[in-house]
Image (cartoon, rainbow, N blue to C red; front, top):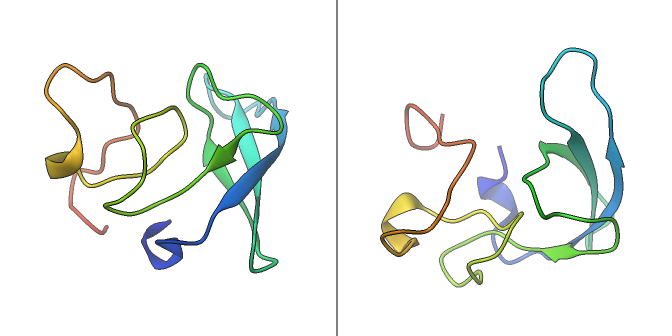
Amino acid sequence: RRHDKDGVPAKVAHIEYDPNRTARIALLHYADGEKRYIVAPRGLSQGDRVENGPTADIKPGNNLALRNIPVGTTIHAIELRPGG
């Protein structure tokens, strides 16, 4: 869950292999000192900056509500239940 990090920028520290997934995972270092993993989207690289929330730019790694993403944008890791 990244919803509690709205407005807190993060930097991608590493992209790592996870033997339990078909996708890579990314370790994020948030500006408030917390570290979390996310499923790494294609196009995300070490050193990239990501953010969450309604004002986040449309780019790989950013987390937005579906209603804030323009039609035709490629998405991944969609929740079955919002906030779940």
